[in-house]
Image (cartoon, one colour):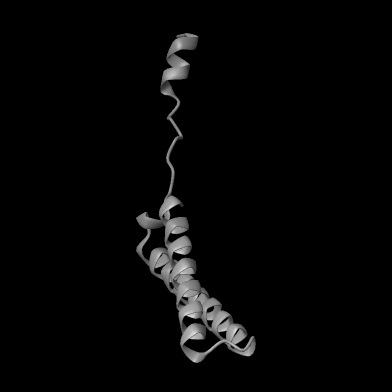
Length: 85
């Protein structure tokens, strides 16, 4: 009978490295759906902010500006979060 011996160093070198990371930007459909979700959430946040500031006796122009600022800020944070992931 033939005997085969493998040293410890060879056994460690034969194992594949598992350091792969998947990012959202690597998968096209997931990226598009994530951007759509962020955009939708930003629209809802902007609308709610505008409506609440209008109820608080703000002028129409000021309510639109508050809603737009909330929309822009939410969109910026969402896109930054997607970029990090």
